[in-house]
Length: 600
Image (cartoon, rainbow, N blue to C red; front, top):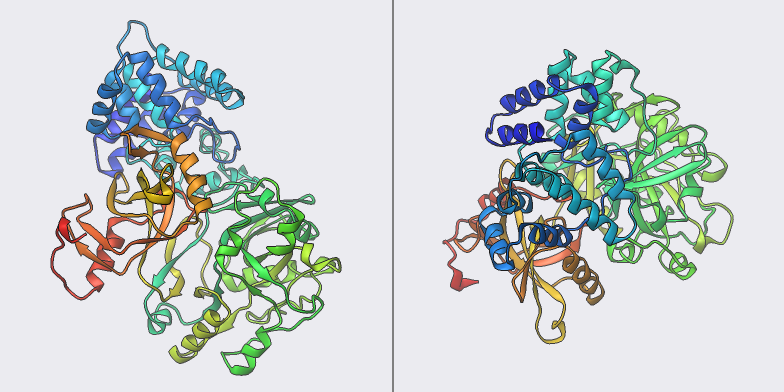
C-alpha cells in the first residue's frame, strides 16, 4: 500500500494526463497481477469494482472521530488542519504519527474493505477502520481515507486507468475501454489484458452502463444545425433510468448507477415478458393514465403537423416531477402511493438485446430493435415502427386494476425539418407538461458517459446550475433546529476542486429539509456550531435571475436571487456543473458591474 500511496502522490503532482498515465502504467507493471488488479480499482477512486453492490457505509463523521482519536489531536487542531488541507484524507496524513514497521498490502486492504462492508454494526466497522489506520503509515492512511470516502482527487479518472492498462500490457486502448464497460470491473479488465483475452469480455447484466448525455442548445435554429436527420422527442421531467432485463428478472438503475427498483415495484412485471435479455434506456416519470387503458393510437413517420400532433394524444401524459418525488428513495411503497402516484417507464433507446451489444449501431437501427422489443401481450397496443422512426406504440398496461399497474411507454418520436416545426413541437411538449425537447442524430452511436452534439436538449427557463452542497447552516424562525441554508459550489476546470458560488435556503419542502438535515448531521466533516462543512455529495439544481462577478465566493461569481429547484439524487457530485458553465452563463448576459459583498 505504501508503494501505491507514493504513486498517488506522484500522480497528484502533475497536471499532464500523459504523464499520469505513464506513472500508473509503470506502477502496474511493477506489481503482481493480483496487486495490479486491486490497485486499478483503488486508482479509480473506488473501494470495490463498479459492478459490485458492496459499499463500506462508513461516513465522514466516523472517520473524523477515529482520526482524532488515533492522532490524539484536539477538535480545534483537527479543524485547523482541515481548513489548511481541505480534505479528510490529507488531514489524516498530516496528523497521524509515523511508527516503525507500519504497512499493509493492497490485497490485504481489499480483504479488510470487504469485512467492513459486511459488518452490520457501527462498532464493528469502527473497530476495523481503527485497526487499518493504526497499521499503516500516515501517507498510506491519507489515501486509504480518500478511497473510503470516494474522494481520491488526484486528477485520475477511470478512463486514464484504462489507458494505463493498455500502455502497461500492450493492448489497444479502445479494446480495454470496451472490455471495462462490459464487465464493469477495471480490475477484471486488467486480468484480461494481462492474458491477452480482452475479446472474451462479455456483457455483465445488472451492471449499469454509463448514460449518454445531451448538450443544451439555445434555439430551434441551433437544434437543426448539427445534423441533417433529427429525431425529436419530448424531454420528460422524471429521472433517467436504465432497465436491465434477464431471465425474467428486471432491475432499474439511476444515473448515479444506484439500483432504484424497490421504489417502483409495479414496473418490473411490465418488462419481465421481454422475449430476450435486454438493456433499455429511458425515463421514469409520474404518469397520468388515459381514460381508457385499452386505447391505442400512433404517431406516423412524417414531419410535424397538427394531424400528427393529434395522433400523439391518447398515450396518457407525464405529471410534474414533484409528484414523482413522492416515490423517490422509498424502500416500501404502499398501495395508496401506487394508486395516487402511478409511474411509467418511457423507453427511448436500447443498448443491448439478444446477446448483442448495440451501442455502436446508429440510432435508427436501435430504434427498430426497440420497437420490436416493446410489444406483445404485456405491451398491448404497441404497433411497432415497421422499420420507420416515428411510428410509435402506446402504453403497455395489462388488463388489471389500472391504478395499481405500471406501464412502459415507447417514447413518441417526431421529425422536424424547419425551425418553425421544431418551435411548434417545443410548445406542444411544454403544453403536455414536459420540460422541452430532445433532438437526436439518427446516424449517431450511443456513447456511454459522454456528452456531445449527437443528442441535444432544448429547454427554456431561468438559468440553472447543478451544484454540490459544501456547507449547511441552521435556519431561523420555524426552521430553528434544522439545517436549511445551503452553501453550494461548482467544479473548477479540471474537476479537481469545488468552488463555492452561492447560498440558498428556499425551494425545498419541510419534509425534504428534515430528511436532508439527518443526512448532513451524519455526514459532517467539520462542526462549526451553527455551520457545518459536509461531505460534498449532495447535488442540487439551482435557479437564479442573473449572475454577477463577485469577490464573495471562490468562483469569482455570485448568483442573484438563487433558489433550489430540486434535489438531484439521480446525479453524482462528479456530474455537477463546472466553472466554464458558469462563465458561459455570465458571458451570455448583458454586461454588468462587479458585485460587492454588500449587494448580496
